[in-house]
Image (cartoon, rainbow, N blue to C red; front, side):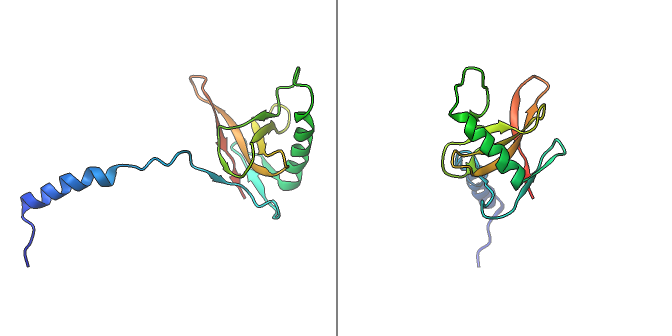
Length: 133
């Protein structure tokens, strides 16, 4: 049985290390949406928790606003910042006045998730997905 020499091992490692270290880019990670036939709730960084019944009520209100004149309305809006495993265009709508939490949904009233608006020190805004519980 032949053992690798030190130089053969180094050569093999120098060839394989970059290949194994390369990440395969597969696009944005999709986040699982809750099963619409089950109970669910979301817990957000804000410390607030939202259950299915509350979220469904907010989604119904938001869907009614989608068809109205957009002159003065800023919400609901199409939402692409976080991608959920759900078919259809995603929209988002704020939960409670002054809250940074938003429900993400489709026009057929399926809740995709809840996100929390985060603002970095430099003013950059991004959305952090809330945890499904």
